[in-house]
Length: 348
Image 1 (cartoon, rainbow, N blue to C red):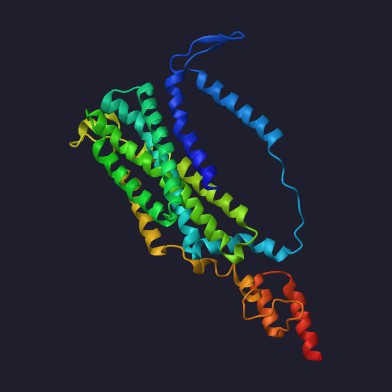
Image 2: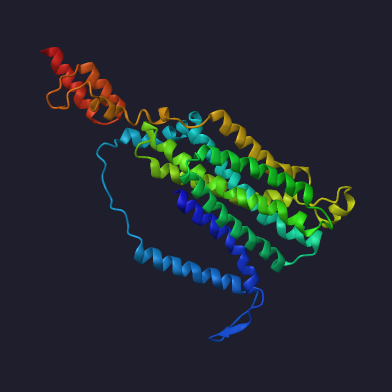
C-alpha cells in the first residue's frame, strides 16, 4: 500500500508538467486536428483506454470464497465495528486525518498556484507547469530519501512527524511569500519545501496504518475494507480543497489591490498549516506504535509455543474455562464447539 501511494503521488506531481509539452502541439491525425485546446483531453482519453485494456487482460480477478467463519451477525455489525476502531484507536484514526490533510494541502497548491502566479508574477500555464515539473522531481527524490531512511532504521513514526513539521512550515511560507510583485525564488521556494515534505506524509502514514490494522485482532478479515476507507478519506481531502481554496482562501486582483499586505491569500488560507500542526500534535499524543500493539496478534503462538508447555497440543489438557477464553480471544466460530465441550465436561 505504501508503494501504491508513492506511485499515485508521482502521477499527481508529474501530470501538470505535461502542460509544457502540450502547449505548442499543432498537427493532424486522420483528419483530427490536435491543438493545445483539445490535446489534454485526448491524452487523458488515450491513457484511460490503455489502463482499461491493461486492467482487463493483465489484472487477475480474485476468487470468490465463502467464509463460513464470517457469520451474519458480524456482517450486520462490521461497519459499526470499524467505525468504533477508528474512533477509539488513535493509531487507526489519526492516519485518516493525516491522509486527508495530505491530499487537501496537495490540492491547495494545485488550485492556488495558477491564479496567484498570474497575478503576482504575470505567469501563464507554461511557467506554472515548470514549477510542477520541479515538484515531481523533488517528490521522486523525497520518496527515495524516505525509502533509504527506512532501510537505515528510521521509524515511520519519526518520518511522518518530520514530514508534518516541514509541511506546516512550507505552507506558512506559502501564505507570507505569495504577494504581488514578489521575487521568483521567494514564490517558488515554499512550493518546493512542500514538495519534499509530501513523500514523508504518504508512505509512512500508510505503513503505520497497515501495521495498526494488522495488529488489531478484531479487524482481522477487514484489512481491505479499512484500506478502502483510508482511500475515501484521501478523496474527501482532494475534492473538497479546490472549492474551499477558490472561494475562501484566494483573493481576487481587486482584493489584492485594496489590501495593505498585497498577499494573494487571506487569513483563511492558514487552515493549511493549521491542519499540519493539528495532525502533528495528534500523532505526538497518540505516541509511537510499540510492540504491545501486536500482542493480541501473537497470543495464539504464545500459548502454544512457550518453552514451559508441552509441544504436543493433541495430548495437552486444558481447563474448559481456559479453552473458552482462548477461543473467544481468537474470535473464531470454534468458540461454540468449546462451549459445548465445557457443558459435556460439567455433566460428566
